[in-house]
Length: 226
Image (cartoon, rainbow, N blue to C red; front, side, top):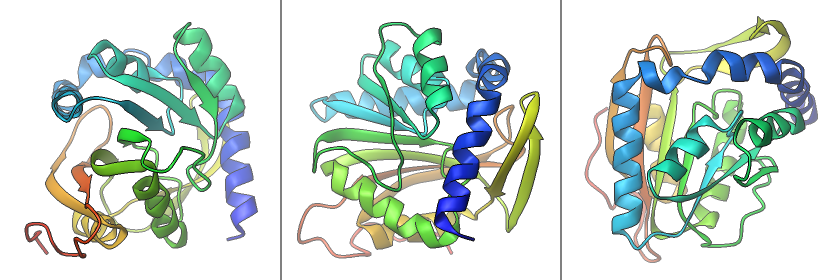
């Protein structure tokens, strides 16, 4: 898979379905109390760590950005799709959104108190996960928190239609232990992880992890399940 092809396809797909996507997910958090609890815990931990800027990477129509702002965090949204960013600005006027890619994350080194990737790694192919997580580590300050959610499973499928329009995106499912190992390799310590079924995903995974401080090696955190 050519990197330019999958990025271009993902961007074009979400540009096409941005309005339909916003309509379908606008009130989804009202149906997902467990996800709301994870986001509330993330916001509490960021505030307890002294606060600071939080990036919602792959923010889509901005619902998670807006929710975290409502929980007292200084969150801004980043999305690959200009159409999605335009929609997010319309859905949440006055909140900060920008066009950008997690494959070339333009955030200053150690500039973030936290980072959320809420079901936004699902279109990233396996060979790009390591570089993307390296961008996350560079951008998050030492002991900064990341919250990642993803579809649990094995393999990938091509999605050709969704949110009321045509799409061409690969949806990648991954196992929690696999994602935890990737985060560990990238310089994060996994603090908590769980799986759940909800309106967000038939089976979703959620991981809280912190950037290790300089000098802490891989595997410095508590052991994780195999």
